[in-house]
Image 1 (cartoon, one colour):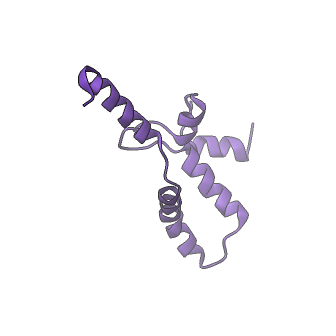
Image 2: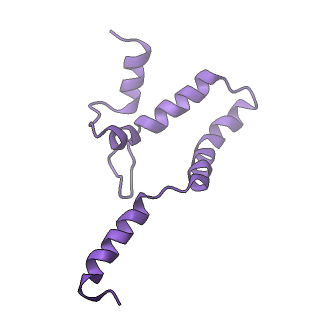
Length: 96
């Protein structure tokens, strides 16, 4: 049915599907990542603790998958991070 343009149209369709983000999947991913930290706090989570989890999530580099070697903040901004997340955290907490 697609004719000669089939491979191009199929690859474009898959690229568009890869760009789609399902909000329920996003929420489930966030919940699964922060659940161990929240369980260890036993209901005494502070805003500072949530900020630390957020900082880690945004600045750590993925270890596998198609985003391997990139941090979420790098993907968002397009700028490469010069340091790992822990060094960036120390720089943020106690700037020299």
